[in-house]
Length: 377
Length: 72
Image 1 (cartoon, each protein chain N blue to C red):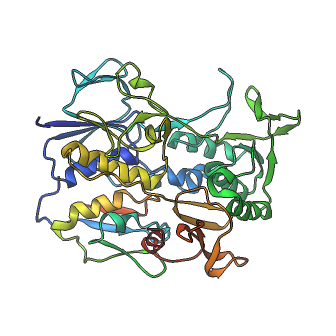
Image 2 (image 1 turned 180 degrees about the horizontal axis):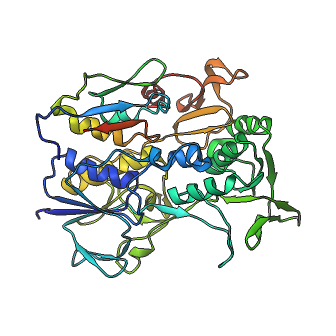
Image 3 (image 1 turned 180 degrees about the vertical axis):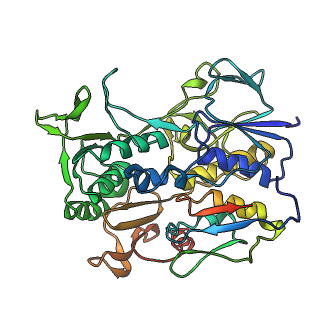
């Protein structure tokens, strides 16, 4: 079958990488990128830092433009798919024909507010970050619901700019992602920076309209001028319901990022069956890049080599620049390979019972990222 | 699309933004390198050689902190 027109549904890094990779691989047909967002493709990474607080402009997060011969359809959401007719249906009723399709519609922020309840803030899109930047001038306190990477970074940024910040979660911050040892190390820095950490096993309820704080499981009320939810994301896969494609915690891809004939997928919207019946998403930047490339090459060449998950991620908070190569969670205690643990400039290694390296972590320890990655290979 | 042989592309590096994640180097090792401290540097002279323009742009696009700009 000849591919004359490849459509990429989505506008974030997985989509942009896929579109660019099609050209790099020599595909000479039409490429169209269909993105629900009005803004040209940008990085979400700076949103929880300078953009959210207004010290960096929204433009500063823009990604370098795609080649001129990639057509951009911005502000256009994918709304449905007719696989047998190779038609992508757009919100508003338009139809785009394709010969090949990359599904990269990403994920959206999970929300906690009741229907119609106003004032819940999240950090997922440029517009979300701008909304916080607009309100923070009049704010002196914030409650951040969720102690994962995003929640703790948001808290760090707000605290750094002088707000009284409380982070609420059902379990100790960062533990599920980083394991107990590293989570505690980072948490200690958060406490020293004056962030209040609260565990509410019963969860929280956002109160007020507009929202003025959160009610904990034990009945306590914590007020905040800003209430930011950072409680995970939901894959944007509903538009594929009824398409016949396999959906389980996102759209299911195989080891080559293939979904169905002439359809591949990449980024936060896709899941992989890592063991029977267990479908896992890997929603972080370097993996979106790896999948975006694989989705493009698999579409062009069915014999392309399998995609290799890229387990590299990072977080920057409370003066700690943490880079992690390896697959979380990190179990047990690490060895110190170099640097100084108390001085917070250190290179750490986690290993399994066979003394094989499972993860290497640098904290404020300057070295080329490639070397860090190689230590785990 | 950039005309082959035009040699007009420049990569602008904002070093104060670079966090050393090295995705640019991973994607386009002919164009980008990381120094001992992990910060990005260009391995080629500017303007970018025509045959490396696509690789340079692709490497710039995967920078998570938007430290790399493509000037044409």
